[in-house]
Length: 89
Image 1 (cartoon, rainbow, N blue to C red):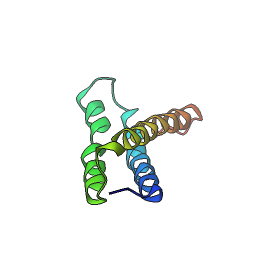
Image 2 (image 1 turned 120 degrees about the vertical axis):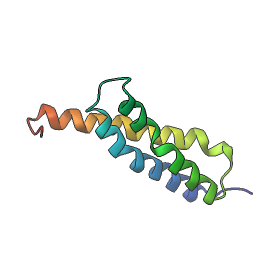
Image 3 (image 1 turned 120 degrees about the horizontal axis):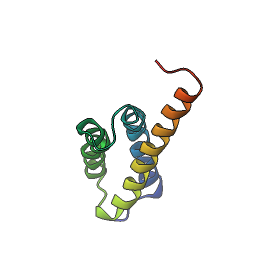
Image 4 (image 1 turned 90 degrees about the horizontal axis):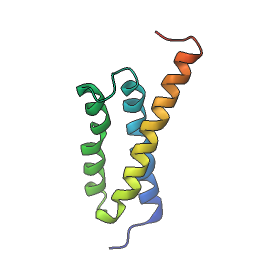
């Protein structure tokens, strides 16, 4: 079955949005600690479930992985920017 582009784009955007808070929180933990790894991998089962429920096959995995990585990176950038601007809490 051929997947529609809006469906794939929506899933990639959702992967980004789900990973954003995890990337934000991940910045507060020591690199390679348990929580650091947990926050990186926490969104993955949810994204896999959404991909399966949407009826998309494994060909979409690189796109959702890219969206998830982009969300993690952007969350970290937002956290560092907040701290740099003196709004650490």
